[in-house]
Image (cartoon, rainbow, N blue to C red):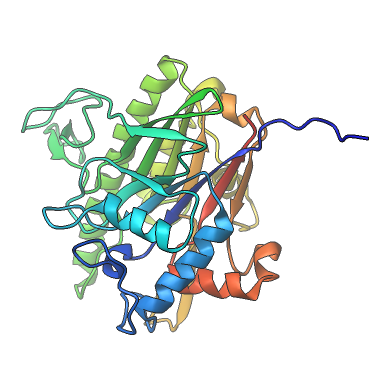
Length: 352
């Protein structure tokens, strides 16, 4: 007696912000498996790498959008470092692709299983001139936008240009966009007035980035393309008091909540945050606040999909060490998630 035939297994995509992944590699892309301190508080480089190996193997994803990936520059290669990491820890997602280099030491890259996926960098939009252009120019160039409504357009640039990928799997074509939007939190000592001023400026910049992203999303919707937008938005519904000043979050802009249903993206965790009336909200990141002597959690990482994918009833999961029972049941994985990064992975299983 034979069982019922089974179709292809669901495609698993993950988004994972790895805190200062770059510090775990030398200039030749070799792993720094040493007892030196990593950029994680009270964590050695060897311990962080071991923890990341455990997490990536547990995810067993077909494709992982890595946020804060190793640096790309004249001496360092994001792709070389990630493929070295994948070989060292036996990952089937062993091929890496990278797009436009970041202005920081934090790159957006995609690590994938070449037996399941083909992927290449495929940027959209026309390059803008040095002074920028309106609309949705290519993400490594500049956008002209009036941020403070004073009638004067300003030049906006992504410090971390989104990664645009053309992906094929199981005979189906997808578009993927990896995102790391600008952080809104000011850093360093400053007066309350200075903190407020910088917070508002950062919020305007973050919203402008999300508007630029949304225009690109609209272009894909116009072409009836299947799209997944994933990454760290450094934002979420109700995250800070400045949202009231602007009336919405960058996440709401990217989702297109003011658009007709057929032009909205969907993420169930964002939906929970937007509709919850009793303060119940999933979280994807955990930060230590020294003045308060406690951890603060936030919903920052999302995987948004177009309506055609949402209709396939995909399964989203936040690999949170304290709220996911399957993770809590495996102490090695729970501890690895806490050691590896200040963010937790989000996965999406899509039946194709």
